[in-house]
Length: 94
Image 1 (tube, rainbow, N blue to C red):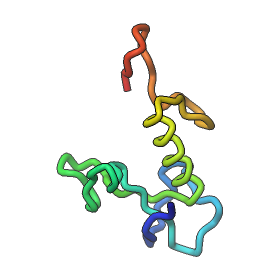
Image 2: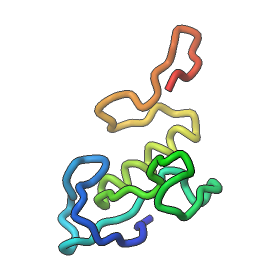
Image 3: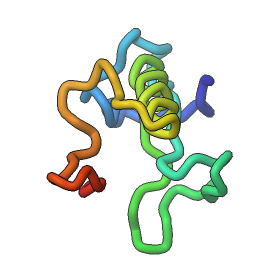
């Protein structure tokens, strides 16, 4: 599940730092709209939203684990805050 390497000084988009510490200047790239779900391999989407974000290996794994759980209708575990809030009817609001 490792992402393509990205040479950057930007912090991990999940944690704000990189863990475990990668080789200097190299982190993984997460495609916000996954390539396997039809996402484009571009730095940004037409509306300016980042499509590629720097993440540490741990953050990248956690993103994909949460995505798998959401796809299977499960509440993501191990998150500090709810990824999807639900209203009183049970419909997704976020």
